[in-house]
Image (cartoon, rainbow, N blue to C red; front, side, top):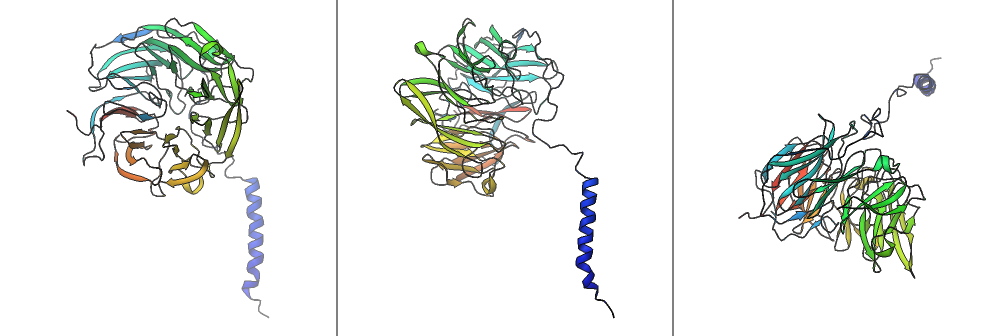
Length: 477
């Protein structure tokens, strides 16, 4: 009797399956692979921690030139810490066929440090790999001519870039924080050195995994630094370098990549910070300056880059990458004390969350780019309702996705920089996504993640190795 061949097929498949499983167990083809995580490309092993660093040791002046420009973008997220320019200079609505005019470009050490602009001068904290130095460089905004530089030697190994911070600039001072937590204060006009602070060494601080991402804050003549280690925050007098106050760190929370945000609620001015271990608020002035006002230990994540978004009604939006998602706190004042209640906590697939950039508030709504693990809306620009941060009002759509790059609002336009150096112009709205135009403004751009700066109609942006200045004015007289 002939046995039909198809009778054997199921048994052959089962036998083949057993053989495959046995081979997989004994010959795992992935056993030698290592998970690829951004920033694991040379983590800095072998770099000594407690070196004797002479902060601000070297200086070179190239040219002194006065400017008639008056516009400023004096720090991370601009003058009002909201990433919105209030300049009256009209900016172009769409790009000319040949793109916007590029006034100049300059090569930088690999990193993601954005620029600050003050009255016709551009300040950026660079890392010079040839001489292994943190270097504060000052350029003319219009010509790109380097005016002066001040630097100090510090060994930093490449870890997906080195520099990550934006200087804080006032009429008198500039304060910078380098990759390994070295704080430097100089006079704004001529770069004369005032003082330095080695946060890692002086405060037993642990520098975050991808080096320091915290941008410094100058408030009322004081440099406010989130140190971690011995203290949560410290205030340093910019004029003298003396410590004005310290906030004890009984929680042993660490420095994150996030930056300190000033906030005033119920008549009390405070500094809000998203640390490694939790979020907190510290009194900013008066007799209580430096006093810990409230904590939110529920916010526990190891990689925190976006800064807190503090809303007038006392809501505080916290977000982080690598699957952390977001948390919304409600700040409550009872008598003379504050406490923070958790209103919402959700994953990136459930509502607004951000990997690296801090959301922008527009007409009470939050605008932000979702991370890669946000499901169907991944990498899309979204707008969420202020009453419910999981309620997406609109998204940019599946054909308009962005990366980790920055976005700002200027002249009632939303400017979004993609990883490859493509600049998109959209109309900010709380009802729909309205894209106007886009153009690749950095040729061969890569990892264009640094915050954008804009003043007097000039826009300064960069990718991992090149900084450019664009004339974005609608009409330049």
